[in-house]
Figure 1 (tube, rainbow, N blue to C red):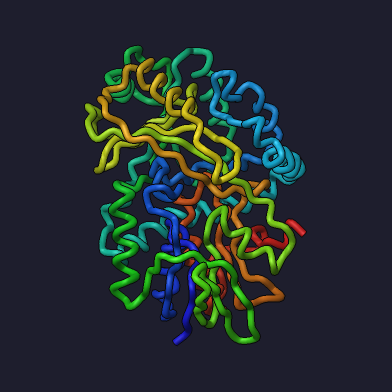
Figure 2 (figure 1 turned 90 degrees about the horizontal axis):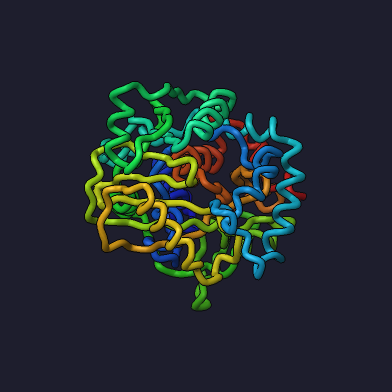
Length: 409
């Protein structure tokens, strides 16, 4: 039996570990990030199969100034972090010239994303964790409604479907807010994870029940050998395995860069508020697009999430982001009550907004799966399947060429 170490215990790392176990690989997962602080468990729970259009595009870049936090938007570019986000922005601008390539690459993954989640949760024994009930997109003014609807009608949404909300759906949405929406659409076949803590427990339970280990330790380095790898931990000890998979989000860079060109990954930080007491009905996620905010009802509470803040992963959180979220909730009159729990976490993002999934050609015992930006939850299950196929030298369900780190050489 082959032995693998997976470096990273977020939703992508755990999905990879589960995928490897299903093809007969013995797995140990190393992770130090507290579960509650990882972006894997702080997101909106949305399986976003409609997000085919790459964010590394000229329309998105041109819209940047009006989306700045200082102008009421969700984009945070802290002046103190300019040395981090300016080089990233320049590389993003360069990637915008290959938007068609990015669109095709994302479509290949997103087409398989929801089937992969259904398959995985069936195997975990919790099929009810995936809800294929769609989501709403709401606009507050006639102008934004007309513009938003036109934008979605012209966007590539892959195999997702939506319709303009009918009278009953509009009445349902109007009951959530102070002022009835000016317009709304409902995506019909996107998905949601019913509860992220339950998903984390199910993945960990599946791995350990099959003899896998999940170890609270930080990997400091991966040493590639002819037929194996050695992982050095922070306490100086080492672990041997046949191969390693680097899936540590933003912190993957320090582990993989000894073997490849600099990896231009950045921490794209998001914020949320979560309320255990609320009057929100059992609805799919609702996106308030004018405010760049999504509200999701989980079994464990109601979550309002927003913001794209390019920064150092270890920089202190910006308290103003939570204040802005509270003002959005109050302005909309959402049926939410105090107290709320604050959260901030970092999405691992590469400048072309495509993940890195593959194997190092000159260090073939090192595989990787990271950089999933806003689509980490969405693409975790299919990434687990692809890494398992790669590890067993099986044909992969999609071409991995667009996701190879060599693209940054």
